Every structure is written in C-alpha cells, then in structure tokens.
Length: 217
Image (tube, rainbow, N blue to C red):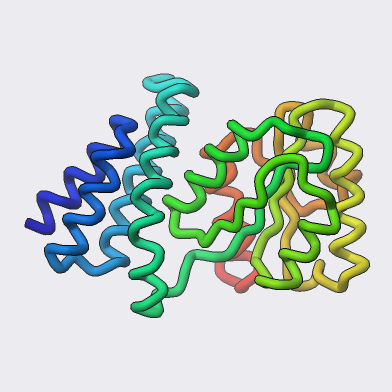
C-alpha cells in the first residue's frame, strides 16, 4: 500500500496534479509510511522535474504545475514531520522585494525548495526589508532568499544584504538572490553569497550553502 501510494505521489507531482498529490500523500501517511519517506518521495519527484526541465523535456508551465503539486503534498506532510522531530534540510525565508509584485517564479522556487526538504517561510511579494529581517530574526533560517523581477526593484537587494549585516545575522545566515533582472555579477554588489538563475539551480545552490555552513564537503 505504502509503495503504491508513494509511487502515486511521485507520478502526481511529475504530472503536475496537485489534487492527486495531496491525496497520495494522505494515503501514504494513513497507510503507515514514515513522514520522511513521503518527503523523500517529494524530493525525488522534485529532482526528476528538475532533470526534465534542464533537458528541455518540460517547460515553465509544467514546472509550475509540478511545484503546485509539491506544495500540496508538503502541506500534508510538514505537520507529521514536525511531530516526528525530523530535521529539515535547512530553513529558508523567501520573498519578492518591496515594490515587486511578481510572484510566480518565487513560488516555483519555494515549492521546489520545500520538495527538496527545506522548511520554507514564503513572505509573498512586495515585502519590505524590515519584514524580511524581522522574520529572519524570528526563525533564524539558514538562508534568506530575495527575488527581484524588474530592474528598479534590484536596488532593494543591497539594502537587504546591508540590513542582514546590521542585524548581526550574516555570520549565521546565507543570502541568496535571484529573479529576472538579477545576474551572477550582482552578488558582491548586493552583499549576497550566491545567485540562482532558476528554481532547479536554487535547490542546488541552497544545498551547497547549507553544506558549506556546516563544513560538509
């Protein structure tokens, strides 16, 4: 039963079916599957979606649908994971910067990170720097991730980096930037640690940042 439900969960995510993904996650847990096994399945489906996207076998609409399916499944399993005391891969606060209402790309990134086992605190779009810093102080994440879609809002990126420094958080928290108007060369300017061009890369970079912070090669 568990194996069938977990396979159904994997297939639902790859197919981008959020209703089936939610039902499969519920069925797997009800059938006795461990919460971390369910999350491992979501993670595997996330990796498969990333592979398909990078190979050109699926495109942004399919990736978005898969991300929505991952979110539906993760919403079911997170309470069970917390009850079981399973440690997440890391904690991430993510937001679109103040003045930027674009959210689709950020939502995909957040869902892919959740599927990869991260505990994601998505603050939404048009988020003031003060709110991002406040959340970082509250939950002490491993990473703060900020997205800027339009050129004018990229000016908020160094503001966030400086605010993290002023709050004394840069020793404990990595700063990841991304968005349509952001590039690799902006990392030093934004007082950031890393840049990710898309959701698949964001998962890879987030894992690297957490490993580096823990001194793991």
